[in-house]
Amino acid sequence: MPPKIAILGAGPAGLTIASLLHKNNVPFTIYDLRTAPSSDLLSLPSGSLDLHEESGLLALEACGLTSAYQKLPGVCTEETLITGKDGILKYQDDGHGGTRPEVPRNDLLHLLLSSLPSLVNWEHKLLSCTASDGKWTVTFQGRDPATFDLVIGADGAWSRVRSAVTDVHPHFSGISYIGMTIPHLPRYPDLNRLVGTGSFWALGSNKAIMTHRGSLDSVHFYLMIQSASTAYFEEKNLDPRDRQALGQQLLTKPEFFADWAPILKEMIRVACEDNHDPVCDVEMKPLYMFNPGQRWDHVQGVTLVGDAAHLMTPFAGEGVNLAMLDSLELANNIITTYKDKGGEGMDDAVKAYEEKMFSRTEKKMKKTLRNQKILFADDAVEAIVRMFNSFGQPAPPAN
Image (cartoon, rainbow, N blue to C red):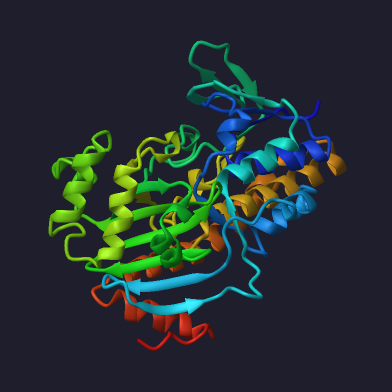
């Protein structure tokens, strides 16, 4: 009898592997904690993802979604602009000829979901994943448990499946962020010119403002702050629900952005005052990570993909790409075993995926950690420009 397969989590990693298994007629069951997202919800501005040719785009091609992906509206170009905290442009790359297009996270989810008609079991809160007579039983809140031969944990940073293979948990990266959105940015011509058509970074004083363009002519941005505690924002009495007070503190306190250029402070002011639109909710979170080299001893019948396996900070644009590549390689191994052997030898196929994944992700995690150290160093602007130029990128503009 073919093995029963469960996928826990319907983010990019879980949906990619589900799409590939569905396309190849391999049966599976996929669950997610959230309510099914509506079309209206998926049309709202969201964070952008930088898909790479050798990973994220490769996975979309295997899913048969390249054509549909290419028809998505291009809301964020590959242009990159970098300034210091003084707002003076230090680096510009127009992005022409690049192969790493940005795609809104919601657009990617909508695309992947389109390949899985009504297959996701939404509103399933996983409580545990436990071994049971050579199989794995997944238990949900308020629902019947189910038993599987293979459980794939695609359930993100705080994965509940992860405890089946390791007792290691993510740790604080030393960076916390405040996320904001300004819709219809052309209403503010100076800000519209500042951030350009793609990505914009302002760096200095162990902090960063990082933006990218989104749907509805929006700009979504993150105020990244190096901090000693996961409770840093609470300790500073920052409340995302009180936008007026939040803006006042961010713009006047020296530990935040009081001495940054007026045009950069204007972005924060507008985001804190432009609160009539539901897409303008403020998010405030610490960033977590695993150390490079994170791995586990293989456990029969259960494995992890994406953030559940190798959570990292976003400073190399590798997270979603590694997640989708994980899913591509694991799915290929499962499909081959299913078609050639009727599912026999599935455990060897999973183990082979894990060994390759561990080696690949360790290198990317080291790259991410290196970039994080550069971006929040005292000489961040000079260091990042040197790094980009070492890749053969355009020279920085003259001041």
